[in-house]
Image (cartoon, rainbow, N blue to C red; front, side):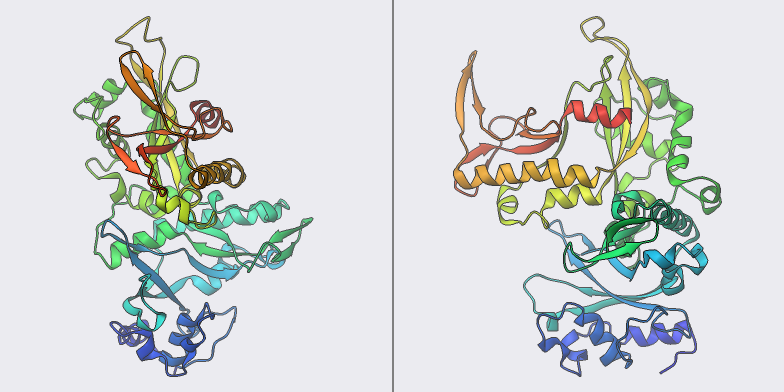
Amino acid sequence: MLYKTDNELLNKAREAEGKTFGQIDIYNRLSNRKSKGSLGQVIEESFFGYKINSDARPDFEELGVELKVTPIKTNKNGSLSAKERLVLNIINYMEEVKTTFKTSSFWEKNQKLLLMFYEWTPDKERDDYYINKSILYSYPDADLEIIKNDWETILNKIKQGKAHELSEGDTIYLGACTKGSNKNSLRPQPFSEIPAMQRAYSLKQSYMTALVRQHIKQENLVNFAKATDLQNKSFHDLLNEKFSPYIGLTDDEISRELNIKYNKGSKSFIPQIISALLGIKGTKLDNIAEFAKANIQFKTVRLEPNGIPKESMSFENIDFNQWKNETWEGSYIRNRFYETKFLFIIFEYNELKKDNPNRKLFLKGIKLWNMPEETIESKIKELWIEVNKLLNSGLKIEYVKRGKKLVETNNFPKSSFNGVTHIRPKGRDGNDKVQLPNGQIITKQCYWLNNTYVSEIIKD
């Protein structure tokens, strides 16, 4: 059937809302449990009645609309998110370099998307998943400017003969994700003899989660960047421009300039400063559209006069049961660093504390950073393997008397482990304990990035 208007197509899609795939599947495609793409195929064949294809043109060519069936999940805290990135079309390195953005395979196939969200739950069969909501999606103007810049970033790497070095961390919203059954899924690239991993354009999981929040949960996300700004400046440049007038000022001077109550010890102080600097004072950082869509999380860095932070950088407390039962590829810590961009708000002291206990903290600048793939697959993987080894063999936990206190020690990797990361306690106090998978009791632990590694990141 040909659809004459977008509304006609969307009304048809909405007829599936509330129905399970088992109810829709008239060709019994779901009986093949190993068929990974079959949920989308059920919608294509059984619901819309067209033959499955891998055509370069959009599924509903008459409207320029591509169909995507994509999962959402309920998290432990009750929030709703996208379960995964939205994989689009395969990148043909040899052909894509001949295109402009408007003639690219990405734009010709994916400029308008019919998104059909279904509810994924781990304890249900696929037949029982149901369609939650359907939306017809066109990229907002500001998003489109960022996506264009992302596409240019991907294309430029291919033109430099570096398709084999592409990484999802290179970009903000539009990724180049690996697409293939294994590491032998290789393709030729035009400006290098080195075969490159097969990759596809994708909208990042954080971008899809933001759409879930906006269109299913009806949350209001606030943009700080306008499309007109992004036509002339990159996202990185725009961020730097917002912060640059305040570089060299102390934190209390910045708070006075922005009319924010100075409260150095408060966890909300720096987030309040960030939203005010971005021109959307009072907006929580996770409600800033660009931060949500790109999964940008801030970290405050306080440098000593020698350029090194006194403290290492802490992250979440570790769920050791989860850690032990995950594969490396599916591990929380690996995905955490692959999927997160960090906005470092960098302050520095010009004096040593011993010389001036009331020393001032000056804004030095910002850095938008994601951990390189190579570091994740080497240093972070080393940590993951070592912790698993210790969890399996039994951790060595001892209590050592230091002065009048009994201090708990263990043989988790220390800051000397590999120069990048380590494990150490992060509980409220020594009584804030957790049970390991083998029954051992230990003070709550978290993973850290070494202060020396953080100082190297900031130097780049």
